[in-house]
Image 1 (tube, helix red, strand yellow):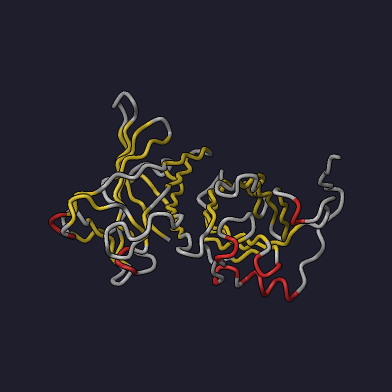
Image 2 (spheres, one colour):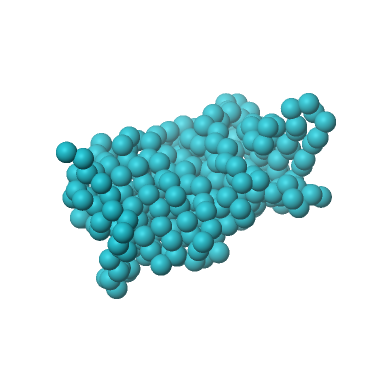
Length: 282
């Protein structure tokens, strides 16, 4: 027997109580009972395909018996989503879900819940990419978003996100979470990097093989990620993005120098074009 999802109806309206619950979704913590289940909390970044609009997303699949989602854009706008009700099978019997809200909609495929996939994400009429991970009770996922722009060429700009899925716990002994992926969107195309390079931070942090982290030194929003290499737009970008949230200061932790922003240097494959600029965290 085959089961289908019907899209002929609108989703049921979100009640006032559901809206309130969804707006607080970013404060929920994953429950251990769902760590190895399709159920639970998912967290990630959303990045526009056509502008520098960006934000963070939280999706709840049946934790506390609720299905809902929240997107918080960098502008401060909070958008809530509820589960479509047109499924011909009960929600607990499927792995593909459709969420809808006043601002837009998206689908999430949890066939492999350790590698969740969001499709058809539309917000305020704009199409978005998303990179999502399963958030675990032992160490919830963390996301930072940013923009990058070339110093002299405003057309060479886009969005940047850094995700720690919680699987690399305290790699440097200072309570940070190891970065597991970086997603860059430039010229309507997304690029994902899952390989981070260790940093020689001997002179500053006393560690010659520092693993890049977010929530560095146990401080939410801090990041140590200097001298990284990421391929996008057909070229290689060397970039530094470190930030001390306690002092609101960008840093170069290789030399203990303060910076005005994160930096990048992008070079075309034939070395004929170089772009240099800033990465600015939200």
